[in-house]
Length: 206
Image 1 (cartoon, helix red, strand yellow):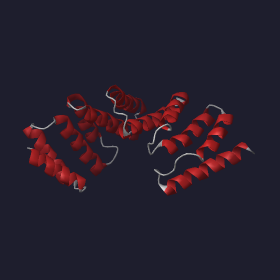
Image 2 (cartoon, one colour):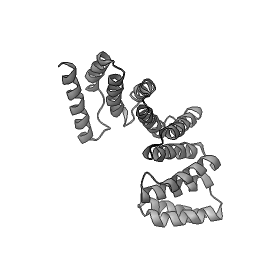
Image 3 (tube, helix red, strand yellow):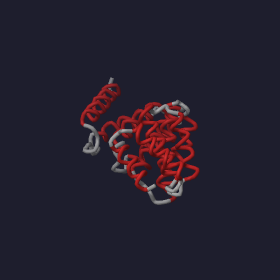
Image 4 (cartoon, helix red, strand yellow):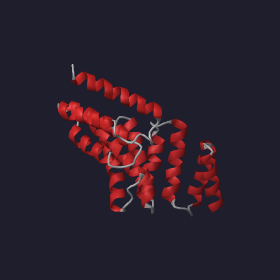
């Protein structure tokens, strides 16, 4: 069983998702590995083949949440479920899953990249439903981390402040943007964000 599982992981790492999926299915039938973990990988392989709107992958992730013995697996399954639901524009359900992912992280002292990714996309889903104050709180939390989304969250903070009419604070956030650590973000994306911030500042001084 272990050899089949490891072989499936190797195929997955090589992006041979169809072959990896078939081997993970064998693992499920034999049932001697952590079923939740295998379900997660089935979902991941399916998602990588068919995209972020794959309801089949969502089924695997949902089952993984229910049966996994590993908190990190549950946390990741919740995140991936939220991701797919967000792309399906089911924002309320996406919010539930991202919150669950964060909760597992908090309860088990796993404040890791999954936790902050769930936080960021939770904030985006809240924005999509016009819950700007709740989103704003999350974006500010993310900025205290070294997560790759911290600069993205600074830009989203500016957007949220604009939505609630706090243009004075939005201008301050624009000024603070330039002191953010840009080492972890793609350089092209940082230039794009800088241009957006510059445009915002010009708007405030019209």
